[in-house]
Image (cartoon, rainbow, N blue to C red):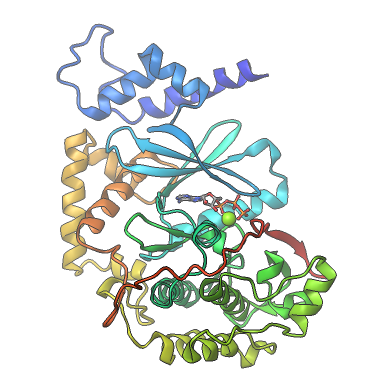
Length: 430
Ligand code: ATP
Ligand code: MG
């Protein structure tokens, strides 16, 4: 019964937020509010202010976030825009109904969370916090305000050659990094490639991702969207992770440069045949170096398919210049480099964030207790948001450029792709 759930929600909230502040459980009702820190004021409002409590009950506030309108939806979720009540940063709230999650869906969700916790890359959406209520689970994500690649191509037609290069290079950088820490995405599609307002690419939706102990481990679950699925997924009982992501990138690249999908059919059976036979045609006006790249990727035999490094070194991407933070590196993951204490720049950033946290009212004790690693803590949420904010100010999210790039004088949107959004599926191969 909803009433019962609200009661549970407010009791839990009361408890967890009280434990955040040192003074709130001791303070008298008529305590002077002028001296309160922003954190104390917020936690007090969440427990005592009628309007704030009402917003929490009706879902206009979730934890420390003020919820606004819907910005997207997926097979398993609704995504809403929200603001952090203390930092005012925009975030995306991916909301999942816990009552509709069966055991399998819960397993996928915990993988989504653990993959995102492990990933720190400028081209991967960051996870700031996880907020649970009795009915729902909220993933608090970095907000990508520039829409998704699927909508962009549907509305404006294919991307120009330079825009394709810049977009594809960033996807490649993200996937190279993911594979280097043994995470396989398994649901790469245009709907899951997002843009920030500044045109930076952000790979999203790790709902089907998996972390393997070894990249050569065979997997056996059909994941993703059929038009992006590699032939071995339709054909075999098991498959290797990295070549499946590589194939999906080939489909993405084809979609970006032509505005159409390489494999199309009215029925699943026909689509399957099309993919298994590698039956696709690249329009002749696609530049030669790009055609060669597509053909290198969309090879039927997984072991013959281009490896990520071959793709990065291809002629078509030669003019792309990455900024320092995008450089795909094998030697050290971004996460590891973030953790190295000698990293002077990070230390500086962390210091800046600590001082902002103090101004908001977080004490050394809050930070120590939390250790800033627990995604289910609001302290971690605000810490990660502030850290990202500081890193963005230093240019960590600026997209690469194409050397000698000139803007296309006329828009090339030949033919907009009017297809339906692609639905992702999950089933064990048999
Ligand atoms: P599906 O499995 O159908 O792809 P899903 O339920 O796993 O979907 P997501 O793909 O993560 O959900 O999100 C659905 C849509 O919401 C995205 O296609 C995008 O339009 C929007 N969206 C998701 N995350 C963000 C974000 N961080 N910033 C902005 N928009 C987002
Ligand atoms: Mg999605």
